[in-house]
Length: 178
Image: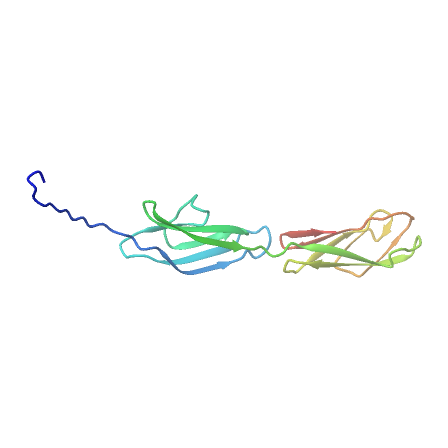
């Protein structure tokens, strides 16, 4: 002070502890193009305080419980903070993965025949989770012109020339083409 006497001041303030993620579980979407994945986050924070969580990198925030559903495949950036935009924690990310894409393939045996002779056509698929639906279009001049199922299918062509066979495979909501 001005008289040369000592002075002192004391102030108490709060240092908030870091929010702790004690458990995180997730489930991937059940099939492609379906938004039924989930993320569930359990946290530990001081009693009497309130927190918020975000799975989109901080664009939107919600209060506990942190149970997110209806999620598509993708990367979700997890952030937590005390209400009032305090002490934001960038926890990390969670990736939800859709089942692998379908890849259809056609096998033809023999690969070259004379007009009117039959070839055996079969289809295979990789990816997805089944069951699969196979739809064939052998084109005009083919007997039969269409078929279903993986095969084998016996197909003959009334006219010579180059031919294109189309195979569409469906697994719930996923499509594969060959």
